[in-house]
Image (cartoon, rainbow, N blue to C red; front, side):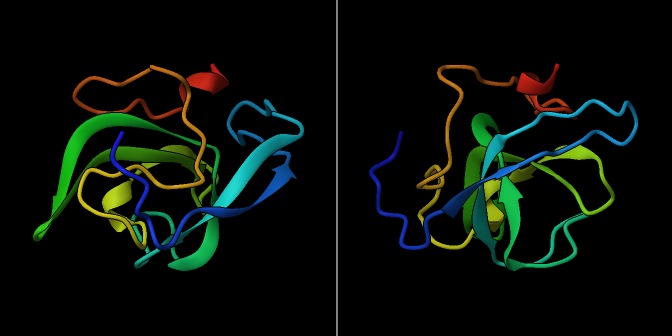
Length: 122
């Protein structure tokens, strides 16, 4: 883990009840944190602090110009599907630094690319 220098950490932990619309499976009272995004990404239409995340894990390095990061955050997209966002799009922090304030699932990592559903939801 990189030194904690993230000047825009994930914040405001709260409980949500996310539900997978394809299966109806719910995860009651799941702690989530809001993380500022530098822009809308994929099916996350809005940047800023509007997006909540459940956890993060190491994965394949994602590059955007000079920025790069191998940390990925798990969330439900605006279209209702679970997925992963490369933390290169999170505000604050340095290259390959995890998002301060976002919980990590121990030593679990994903190889090459992260799975479409959060591993904790299986």
